[in-house]
Image (cartoon, rainbow, N blue to C red):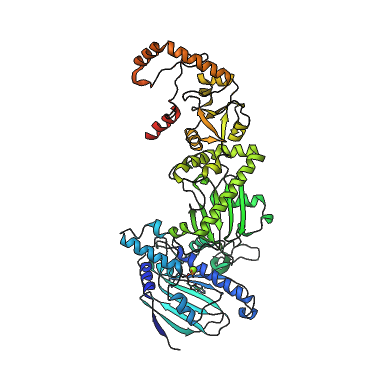
Amino acid sequence: MAKETHEFQAETKQLLDLMIHSIYTNHEIFLRELISNASDAIDKAHFESLTDRSLLEGDEDFQIFLTPDAEQHMLTIADNGIGMNREELIENIGTIAKSGTKAFLEQLKKAKEENKDLTDKEMIGQFGVGFYSAFMVADHVTIVTRKAGEKQAWKWESAADGSYTIEECELDKRGTAITLHLKKEFCGKEAEQDFTDNYELERLVKKYSDYVRYPIKMDFTFEETPKDKDGKEIEGADKIKKVETRTLNSMQPLWTKNKSDIKKEEYNEFFKHQFYEWEDPMEVFHTKAEGTVEYTALLAIPAHAPFNLYQTDYEPGLQLYSRHVFIMDKCKDLLPDYLRFMKGLVDSPDLSLNISRELLQQSRELKAIGRALEKNILKTLARKLKNDREWYEKFWNEYGKSLKIGIYNSIYSGSDTVDKLKDLILFMSSKDGKLVTLKEYVDRMPESQKKIYYATAKDKETIEQLPQMETLRDKGIEVLYLLDPVDEFAIETIHQYEEKPFHSISRGDLGLDDAESQEVKKETEEIQKDNSDLMKDIKAALGDKVEDVKVSARLKSSAVCLVADEAGPSLAMEQAFSQMKN
Ligand code: ADP
Ligand code: MG
């Protein structure tokens, strides 16, 4: 059959145009895309061979081979996968049928209409556009391919000028070889990035495709001085060339191994290596699910919270993989923000490589995975709190603030976060100066006590010197110490625990309902009445500085104390608000 020329479909042309004009800023991902295609093709060959062994023609050594050619400015990515026949070349390469690519084009169109910058990294960076990404770095692409089980091989060629050619050719084995004729920006020492450089290619494979199941190989050439029989280099001898074929990827991702085969040290090493941690993680979660959504997750709570965990420059999120191919580094849409300290990755065949960040956010699969992970983490935390208090308090000291902020933020998100977290939070308590849960506090309250009392200050000592503390201490009433401004916001959001409202000891009446208190209350009211002129005079003298002046029964050895209005914000909250304004 003679060489035939085909026009690209209109949408393909549009996409190619965008590739050529490099709207995409992250050029290097072309290699990830082509390797992932090669890996998919090998998967198919492997699968088909299960029912028809002859298809492999004796070549069962599945592999992907990279051949850079610096002199010719070329890079070839070859696989012994399923290959393509003529119809498949036209069908798969010449047209855009994939939803991911279509969505990409739609996003681009929208961006154009809204006059958005097309080079915006956020928008473009996360799209995988498959085979066409080759045209970001190459101005001419050749595919030579032979389908497993068929005799005829085909050569496809395009210079991305609106058309491509197909012709018959010879190939002695099944599979596909894609040769990129690299643009001059992408080869040579002077280049912005050199895709003919062995070490650069090795780095990219490690970065994006380390866990591809098949070996990705490349030849490294070295020059060596010949050695004599004692192993000493022979001076003045001509150097000899030595070629060494190396496998660039480690292939088996730790998370795909059986849990029972993985040692604790392996998990620890993996986390330190993968997430640049210095210490072993506090806890590792390794889960596999095979329900409606299939995924494997490997998560960890790092030993220490990063210093900027609560600052805007901290980027939370988990790594995403699809069939062990890396998709995204910091996917924020899996876990709720209060788990922002979690590190780890999720690998799911149900997530597509060719998907935009926006579409991913809406993905049903992603949401289902996120919910399951959240549930699992919360369950583990609850179990630890129950069985390993020491561990939990260590965890709390590192990450407790994150959970408290989560509770407070639920007033905006309107979620059920309060219910999820209220039994996981701890407060310092006046009882033995230890951390307590709300449940522990309520369970040991005397029957006459109707409220959960708390005090706010920046340290324990300040609270212990509050005049109000004396009364409560004498009555044996436990007080929670809220030492972080966020504590009170969290408490205000929880509102009440087991129908017991929270009550700040520096706010209005303490509301102690026991007999003694009733008596004192009556007495106090009488004193207030008898001294109303005095109170008025004090109020006049203090003017706007106070709202009101009252006789109090809660003082023991102090003469006066400042209290907050019943309805208004507490003193500590007022202080926190004024700090936020600054
Ligand atoms: P996707 O991989 O998402 O399907 P691509 O644009 O990356 O999209 O590839 C388009 C199609 O071209 C693939 O679905 C596959 O059918 C075919 N293809 C690409 N590369 C190869 C290859 N190395 N071997 C066999 N088929 C391939
Ligand atoms: Mg692909």
